[in-house]
Length: 124
Image (cartoon, rainbow, N blue to C red; front, top):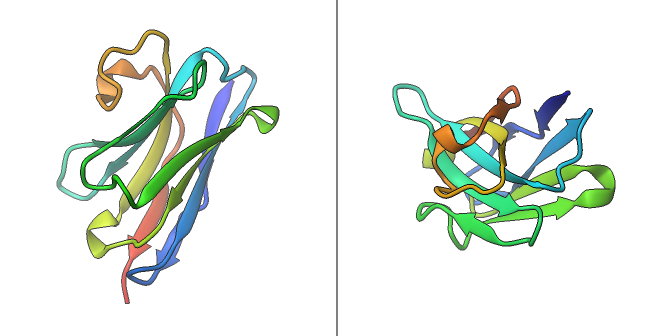
């Protein structure tokens, strides 16, 4: 039973990157899946999440309009498409699951299972 985050890397400012969060050993159907990030010296920040039971989504203010979260239930995977990346998006990105109901969608404490992080670096 695990979450596997992947897709991080080095990208130039303004460029795109897509992260994947694949679940194995359990189905994502009745969970909220969240993406969080943590930059050095900063607290973990909620980026986006998707309620896999009804498809509703939430975004943090700093990424709204640039990032898009989506799901592929057949692959038991959630994606985070990141466009117009900025240097301040540089961080380790984590995916996590929260069992429904989740009352504070972008709060890390609402999530009980975490994947390992994937590094995203935005730099020229």
